[in-house]
Length: 256
Ligand code: 13P
Image (cartoon, rainbow, N blue to C red):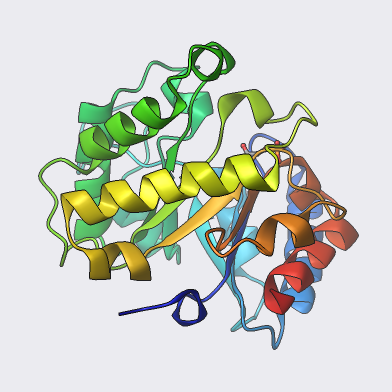
């Protein structure tokens, strides 16, 4: 059976709708330098229009991913970007179901399951985001939300097809708020997610799948979060825009 040691730490920088073209290129260069030689899978998720600028940085240690992909393959879908276009542009990963899309744009699990299919068809690693809102947590529904989002978004996908899957637990109330889940709350949520993957697929699959935490991760709290056996890295928003902070987070993941 796989153990935590067999799961390479993963650190993602979700740049969201920030930066300029020059700023994106500079941040990608600094991040590539920070990731160099680290035993960490490090991926930045720039705005679509800056993918090429991030990709232009020559680095074996920094991957680039899309913040979303279409559930369709091609055609009359104005403003959408397909998974195969991301792959063609040098992406290796794609975020699926970020809360700013689930809650901000009303994306549901059925749509996300189709996006995962497109990502897998294109050879991209899907980074599936799940997490409860504050009111769901206060009603004691956090575990049920994590389970139902995982079950709903993974519907129709086999264990083999999902071999590369990364799950990001991002409690909505912790995103961009400066309020981080405590290591023990995050650990409990990750254990729920891992148990759900085991129930849906197999214990082996659950043990080898990386589950990362997102929500106000910063240079000060990263090491404590990543010390948990259940937390395989982080998906970082605001702090990924500050090169020195993101470098410290990568280092914390490398040392866990
Ligand atoms: P913050 O790190 O800014 O809270 O954002 C987390 C996030 O949404 C990463 O996808």
